[in-house]
Amino acid sequence: MSHFNASMVGVGLRHPHYEMALDGASSIDFVEVHAENFFAAGGLTCTLLEEIGNRYRLSLHATGLGLGSAVGVDDQHLQRLQHLVDRSDPLLVSDHAALARSHFEQRPVHAGDLLPVEFSVQALAVLVENVDRVQQHLGRRLLVENIAQYIALQPADLSETAFLVSLVEQTQCGLLLDLNNLLVNAHNQGRSDPLQYAKAWLRDIPAQAVGELHLAGSTPVGDADIQVDDHAQPVSQTCWDLYRYALTRFGPVPTLVEWDNQLPSWSVLLQQAEQARAILNESTSGLKESATGEVNGDDL
Image (tube, rainbow, N blue to C red; front, side, top):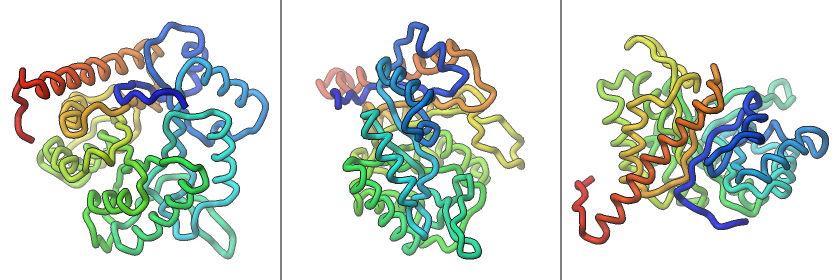
């Protein structure tokens, strides 16, 4: 694998943008693709991924492992992911702190969605076992993403941050922190100040645990309405503010802009990435100046 640069900025690459991503000029450092879309061992998708990989570093973002599922990770799914990792040499590999798989009438079923896990000791043990198995199989560190949750599950033996930090401690995995998910959850929990809630959440996460940051936007709703993490809008100003704060907490971290619905033009998506790069560069410069004593940063 080529040299890892923590100050990398990328975008989620979705199919309407394939042509522009391959033909147009771009300064982005990496692209994220949904791993399951490229499981085929041959054919057009395999060729396409090779062309994308020749131009950009790749991040494989899986959605189907079901890391929180008590029935475990599906052998075939894991084997296909391994083949994809082996042939694409990705910069990052990630999935979610979510469940997706179970059994119904003695048959395996998949929810087709990212279902929340309870923050219990029992659920943590399941997640630890599954993450450890995936990492042992792939022979590399996995990043686990916090998800948007629309209901609070019981029992809650642990806070979400304590749950995720314990996962990292027990498996040596990394965390993919989706900042927009924190803001969506804060809204849906009726928090009076989502930004302050999210900042406090980040303060509970050790810097060495964080392997990537996701930025996104969601369709605005009224105070009493449920907000959906639809990735259908530009990164909100609140999310940009939270990103600045996250960088003061964790230092430079590979950053990705996600936009999955109501997709903009490729140029607009690149503008979002360049805005992230400007904030990342500004933060990195400030940290360097602070380290040399030229600037005294505020206490966290």
